Image 1 (cartoon, rainbow, N blue to C red):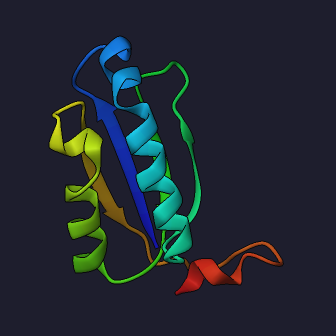
Image 2 (cartoon, rainbow, N blue to C red; image 1 turned 30 degrees about the horizontal axis):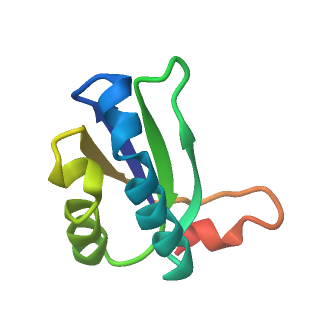
Length: 94
């Protein structure tokens, strides 16, 4: 599993400018079966995505995020070897 932590490098107004294409990118990540959960950080300084899949493919996909392309946010990708989960969350062990 991967924790994709994005931190805004530009203002929230600038993030809002690219939010629609970023959210289309997020929805495509779900459609690919890679994204499991996502949301904004509080306070609003970026966001977090929980993902599964191949690291190289995830890294390439992150590079294609409109937030990355336009310098709105930078990503930190952390790989996590999940060993224990609550019932129903076994998909995280991939």
